[in-house]
Image (cartoon, one colour):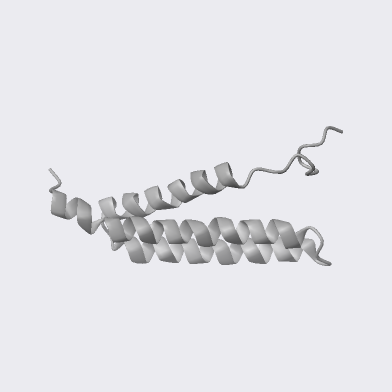
Length: 101
């Protein structure tokens, strides 16, 4: 059974996972915003994907330290940021994504 002190020791890991989520999904937002008008859009998207994945995988490796519960806490922070950002950053009504063709 996990004690309260052990749960509290996972809070910094949860926060670290949230930071990784902001980096990943913030980078995705910037990539889509700027990449669509870039001259070499394919290269822009590919480089962004590789960098974002490298940062997140490395971050999970460092945060997890080989312990399952630490990894789960980091993953929970990451997913919570995804839920937060997708609920806050909905396309506007004038967006090309919401217009019917």
